[in-house]
Image (tube, rainbow, N blue to C red; front, side, top):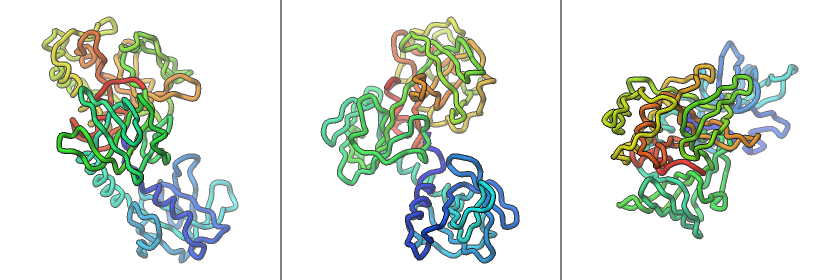
Length: 380
């Protein structure tokens, strides 16, 4: 799912190369999200590592910058009182006497509400002018992806902006600059640009891709000490041990929502009402696979709004859908996990690929919106 912290972190980081007249060569810079504000002290949470305590020097200038800006030319004067919890700041100054402290001589501020507005606009653009799926081939500048039964041609140009997801995250803030050479067959890919009227081709302004694995099955074992669970994947029929990390996003589909999805997929009509599936329930042979696939799209779009859970909340015998990446140990690492999906998985036609979640949610919405990247099924 595209994290709601968007390009603002990248934009602020770009200010680290501001002219020497603005930032002294020996200055220390710290970028992060405001956790607390007390007097002249800010507790800052960076993208990685421990919190930093920032003490703002008296009279230190505060500059407010619109999200997406890459220089201070667009900045306007602000006040320290304008800094609030949730804002993004770049603090410039010198290291304090204690570890994890900074004496700031300047603050560059991006307000959280401005960031949210920019995120919403970006997401709408990805939804309106975005296509994606599983990469089927890369022929010169043209990437062919499959999305369900559709085959989509995505033409890249020299100006296309490529991003690549990190191996353990589907947060846009964790992406790295990429290139066409990074895109491989089996990758999940999402592109934004000029879309043809039939939505079967486009010229891409931006491309984000990653290598992910979709797993669906019933939990057979949970190991709290190893922070892992084991399930039998419905596609490969093999037992898979999946690692759970602090970055893993674990969600649960409430019973009422599960019942609605199961009814839409035809599970109830096939004699498998929502929640009736058990660890021994085989996928039901039901007609209407396209409707089942659309449920996967809807789930991906609403995922960020579902209740969270932890590994301790899960139990053996529960059915789960997982988007995973290859972890450092070789075992898949869960990026997203959704439980409460027994009725949905049991409605999958026998012998067909289970419904899968999209590994990220760029645009929200349904159909050709955010979930298109996962609509074609699982696998690398």
